[in-house]
Amino acid sequence: MADIFVYLNIVGALYTLFHSIVLRRLLVRMTIDLDKKEVSPSDFAIVVRNLPKGVTKDDLKSQIEAKFTNVIVSYVNLCYDITTMIELNKKISELSK
Image (cartoon, rainbow, N blue to C red; front, side):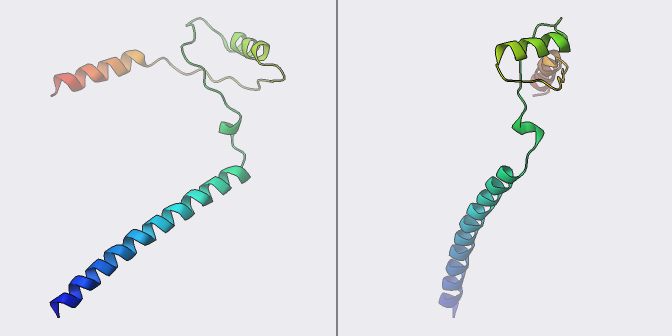
């Protein structure tokens, strides 16, 4: 009787493994199909790093439009420089070890 439980556990583990592989493939295929169907801002966005501190939105917009032909920049979102905060967090985490 104990042998049956061992075999059933093995069959259950193999079924779970096979099912998770198939489910993962279906989910990946579904996300790819959804990404192709839906249009989001990330489809048309670019990330520019290491900008000079004095750059303005208009300067950046004109430079991008001059650099890339047939590109019209509709919006520029300048983010904060958080490199000092990252360095402080690293120092704090090193001190707490």
